[in-house]
Length: 194
Image 1: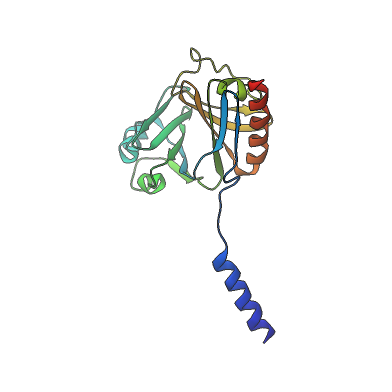
Image 2: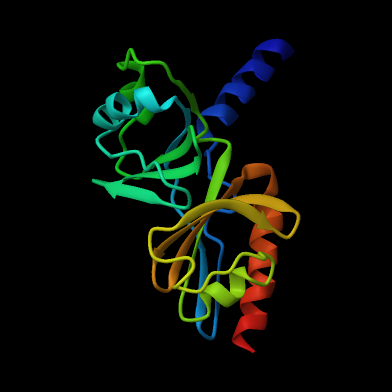
């Protein structure tokens, strides 16, 4: 009888459990900068030789960039160049880039990393200054223009950084570092506002 009651309680708890993204609902506003956790998105880590780029671009519906520090966006899907044969593909339109790549017979490796990463949006006139509070990269518009993307560091954490507008950035990090990255960006935002 005790086992039956335990099973009933466990199933009741599991049906009421709610899955939330890391740091859901957290945001920070300071003079000139706003930091928010972005909604969940589909992501893949894509590796492929140059000969496969055209077929993968066609399947994904976005042209994979082939130059350092660049990105391409189309219909809610963004491809960020991370290396000569490496891209981070982010889909915010609810489609599955991993399934799209599975249809391609050209040589490639596509790994789903949607649950590994968390993204933050840093916006406002002091957004670059806030990110530079922990990132040594030159984020001036001349050096890091709209559409620029790179794998870099923020404090002690690896991040992928995308400039989505003159005063807006997407910061991608591993879920296990998300609290650290959010806290560092929060403190840097306060400093940038001062």
